[in-house]
Image (tube, rainbow, N blue to C red; front, top):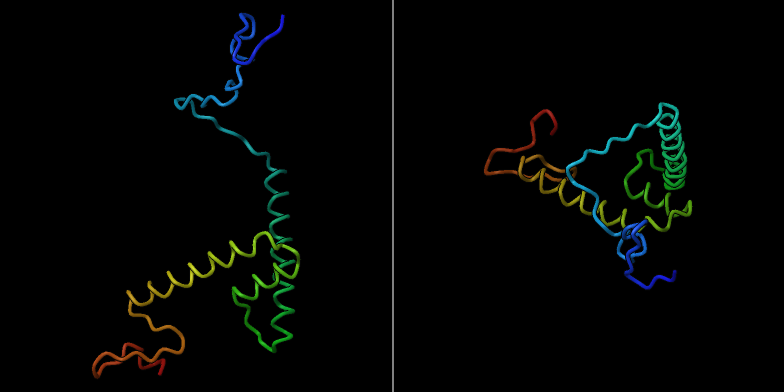
Length: 131
């Protein structure tokens, strides 16, 4: 028996319907998955190895520039240098967003950013112990 698009077979239901696999799953059922301990440990080891890999490359970048402190830019440059080009643009985007949010948050809390010497009237907002 030949089936045309959208045909319904009594034995298989809507299997031959092109939209059969696009139906939304029922929302009233909770689906719970279990991840084995070995799988969690394997993922943790991979993440740790990746972080060490990228951080060591960023550390080399800092050593070339005679700096001791890693920055977010160093991490992104290291990822780019190691061949993770696909993540470069997105990582830069979120890094810039993080910097903007950090700046706004500091301004709201009146916490001076490094290099800022903001003063309000005759009172400094920088604690005297830090001046």
